[in-house]
Image (cartoon, helix red, strand yellow):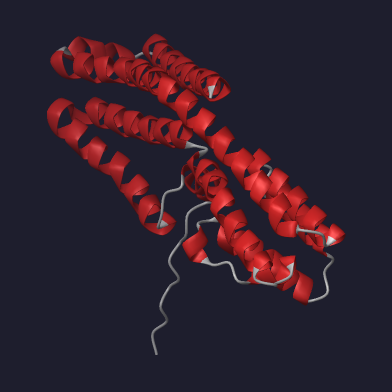
Length: 253
C-alpha cells in the first residue's frame, strides 16, 4: 500500500507575515510565492540567458518580501475595526438579561474577527479560567489598543455588575471615533505608501531593463566580484529602504 507524502506547509516566518497581511489561504499563497521566482527565472533566462534567470529569480523574491512587508498590519486593523460591532452585540445581550460571559459566548463570525476571539474568552471561563486571565491572554496575543480597551470594559462590566451594557457601549463609541480618525490618517498616508512602493520597485525594474538591453551590464554584474558586490549592496540598500519607509508610513498612521 502506497503512502501519501504530507504536503510541506509554509515556514513560520511566511505564516506570520501572511497572517499579519491578512491573506488567505496561506498554503496557496505559499505555493504561489514559490512559483513566482521560478517563473521569473525562466522568463529571464529566455530573454537574457542564465544571468537574466538569476536576476529574475532574485528580483521576484525581493518583490514578494517587500509586498508582504508593506501589507503587514492589515489583519490587526481589520480586528480593531470589528471590535465596536462585537461590543455592541455584547451590550444588546446584556440589556436582554445575559451576563457578560453569556453575551461573549453568543458572539460569532458575523461579528467580525473580534467575535470568535471574544467568544473564545467565554469558552475559557466556562472551563474554569478566570475572566481576567482569559482577557489578559487575548490582550497578550493581540496588543492592539482597541482590544486592550475592550477587554478593560468587559472586565469592569463583569466585576461591577451594574449597567455593563452602558460601559461597553461607551467604549464602542470611543473606538468608532478613533477608527474614523485612523481612516482619515490612513487615507492621507495612501499616497506615501504608493510612493514608497514605487521607490522600492523602480531600482529593481531599472536593473532588469539594463541587464536585458545591454549584455555588458549583465556580464559585469554576474561575472565579476565587483559586479556581485555592487548587486549585493544594491539589493541590501533597497531592502533597508523598504523597511525604513514602511516604518515611517506606519508611524504616520
